[in-house]
Amino acid sequence: MGLPMEKLPDWPRMLKRATAAAYLDISVAEFEREIMGGRIPPPVSLGNGPHWSRVELDAYMERLSGGPADDWRSRTNLYASR
Image (cartoon, rainbow, N blue to C red):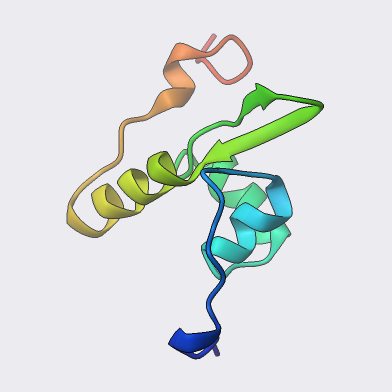
């Protein structure tokens, strides 16, 4: 069950892993599975660690609800098909 609307936080522009998972109302483990499945974009390096753009997460969720998301994995060395 989510938080009542009056209790929702003012989310930062860039989110750390746990905050990004909370923003999507899923566990960190579910967040990781969604990244591996290509449904959530990879992080960017910011400051001392990985961060996710709240705006980009919103765009991916919008595409998920209306059609397939761009598969970013094909453009990375780590996840590209070999």
